[in-house]
Image 1 (cartoon, rainbow, N blue to C red):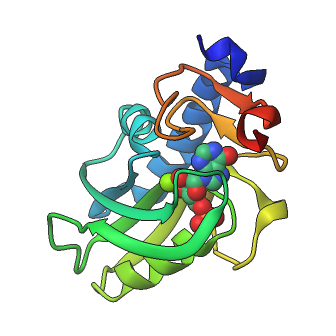
Image 2 (image 1 turned 45 degrees about the horizontal axis):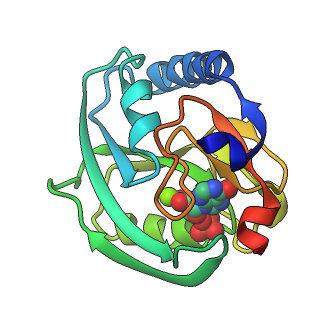
Length: 180
Ligand code: IMP
Ligand code: MG
């Protein structure tokens, strides 16, 4: 069914796995003996985060925050709302924010300020994908899985109108789907 929506497979399941291995190794080296809390941004990053933490060899806790910035289309509305805040206190914790993709940077710029106000000991950012050509606000990224061109992607957590998050690979959405 998803074949009529996908132009090409951009990142295969095998490549996803090697991206996870590389990120997890770097994160493990950074957070050995620290008080790590991994914060996932719902919903997109949940799939990536769950796979990633199984490969991180550190004591860690997890938490989630949900924001909305997209209005069921493919471009950002520019407004960010916190739909669900963290469940636990992160003051004095080493917080690693895990995001699925940084596009304009609007969401992450807002979230880093929002989380910094909770006074964590440290705050770093890991993203599975980065679309640097689309950036409107610069955000400091500490761990990047892969840089991609300006294509709208679906699968492995990425949705189009809330569907396709369950695909085990990342595909490029056919432009005619959203240009209709
Ligand atoms: P930003 O605020 O423009 O950086 O948008 C970030 C959010 O937009 C991400 O967390 C995704 O949820 C969503 N997003 C950006 N590009 C894509 C894409 O290609 N496919 C699916 N979601 C995307
Ligand atoms: Mg997202």
